[in-house]
Amino acid sequence: MTGPKDLDPASRRVMVGEELRHARERAGLTQQALGELLFVSGSYVGQMEAGTRRILPDMAERLDEELGTAGFFVRHGAKANESKHPEHFAEAAEAEAVAASIMEYGAMLIPGLLQTPDYARAVFLDFQPTASDEAIDKLLTARMERARLLDNPTRPLLWVVLDEAALRRPVGGAAVMAANLRHIAELIRKRRAVVQVLPFSAGGHASLHGSLKLMHFDDAPPLALIEAPSTGRLLDDPATVNRHQLSYDLLRANALTPNSLWP
Image (cartoon, rainbow, N blue to C red; front, side, top):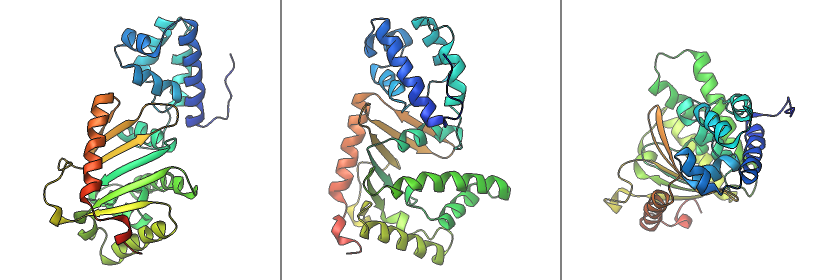
């Protein structure tokens, strides 16, 4: 089989995922049955088939072995896994790009999809104060490309709960912070994002451990992302994702109503 030469990595992942589904069905296996052979969940297999999760090199080798696909997944996996994003966040960013809905809690910072370029640059410089301009520009370009998701007037549904701490911390200085808040207000006025604020007066809450992101898809199980500096965990276990969904629902219940912000 000759693969298309000009596909971007996201399109390649979809193509490879479709081939995985066909190969699994030819082998007479359910997603759960294949997952047991690979020591992953059936949900994980479904996400690889939908292109929302990468097929990593060791997984590609095991797929070729279990499905008798003569090295197909090893050969096509590398191109499909190319990314402009840091390695720890690449898989989450790729899933974000095809999500039907994204629900996010920003504990200390404004989430990336809502950041202006100046705010994002300040975040990168604070974390990597000795990085070159080229390195910072590369990170900034990738983050702003992520935000283009919001150019679509209806998809994905974006719901963000901002902790009061994220609003009061003047990242980049007062002018940069003010510009970012105006940007968020404009997204709200355009009905492009639903935003709530969790005030300090709410006291303790269900996500004191930090930021949280949930992603739902049309044709794959949901994912939860727990992120920390230079690391991130993308979770697909249904019980774990449901527990984080409950945490997010409790955050929304304790936050100010959306129409209390920038009417």
